Image (tube, rainbow, N blue to C red; front, top):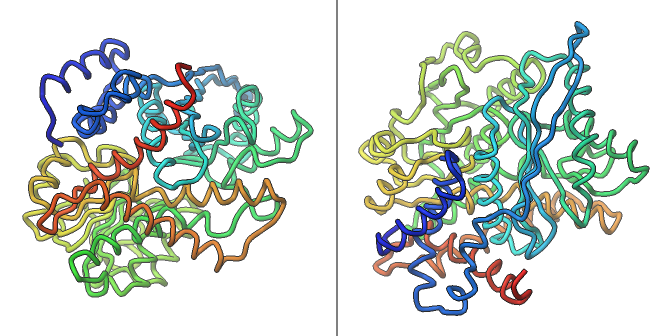
Amino acid sequence: MATASGDLDDFMNGVRRRNPGETEFHQAVQEVAATILPYIADKPEYKEAMILERMTEPDRVVSFRVTWQDDNGNIRVNRGYRVQFNNSIGPYKGGVRFHPSVTQSVLKFLGFEQTFKNSLTQLPMGGGKGGADFNPKGKSDREIMRFCQSFMTELVRYVGPDVDVPAGDIGVGGREIGFMFGQYKRLTNRFNGVLTGKGREFGGSLMRPEATGYGAVYMLEDMLHTKGTEIEGKKAVISGSGNVATHAAEKIIHRGGTVLTLSDSGGFIYDKDGITLERLQWIKDLKEKRRGRISEYADEFGAEFHEGRPWGVACDVALPCATQNEINGSEAETLIKNGCMAVSEGANMPTDIEGINKYLDAKILYGPSKAANAGGVATSGLEMSQNAAHISWKEEELSKLLRDIMSNIHSACVEYGDQGGGYVDYMKGANIAGFRKVADAMLAFGVV
């Protein structure tokens, strides 16, 4: 991520001054600016129009009070947000996250990343993100319903199928999407594609649950192919145990790899013989139906359970699929020393800047999140198309479209990230490919 340090420092000083204390957002912008500033150094059309500066300023940030009542009759208050970052190539598109860690900084970093990620899919979607500092864990279905209804009562002012189309994220799955869509329909008297990740019964798409995890594995597969090798026979370390992680694990197993680990906030399991498809289904049921802890797997099947994160387990490939900044510099170094040849990021910005630099210095295969986990939003975009046309595509059609989109993303990364000598800087490639489409649209609109 080399650039003229003075240019990057000056640029980042301006970002920090305008966005004080928003460390996650600063990190996301720096990771992009470090490759985009050298790229636009000899391109006056982008520099004079201040395109990168405009890209780092969201179109709008909305925050609002979410008031709801728990099962004991107590009034509870949370804060909700919607960050509409950039709609230069299509309606704002990005998930809704319910988690105590949600802040404006976290959502701005996610919305900024989403702008580039959506651009890479080549679908007409802008970047946005939203959420609330609400913790669904331990809440009853009725409490979650009341919260979602209150959240949508305010959010409805800012969304629409041609304006802003939210989806799920951490803490927001099919149950929460259903409650929010029901409230939207009640308030507007409209049945349209305002949300993605819906149930099949009311406009949802096949392949959406699998898409992010499968997409991360497709990116891994394409990167490995550049080195003349396959997933088959490879040992994989995966973090997380939610939707993205379990479907990434499923596809690794389908391709003949061995999945050694999954995790949650309490720690990770290590199954030295490999997690089977049958045991993976047990984990899905544990998380989706009983909302249990991953440690229960160790008790059930005799595997090891460890506190902390799984990056000390020796592996051939790693797929961080939990949350942001779950791999730091020393953990990245450990992965490399233990023989990891490829990292494909299923979560959003799971590696910090020091860790990314370790990957780049070692020249391992590194699929950054904006490219590797774009399969989810790509399939959401396909759901939007189906809703607009009032049709439903078959699974085989969607599966082929997802695979093609991920292959095209990989090709774009290679086009702009090829460093010669058989090495591709996928970070550089993803940033430049994502930037160009949005930047050219912004230029076409003039100064707006």
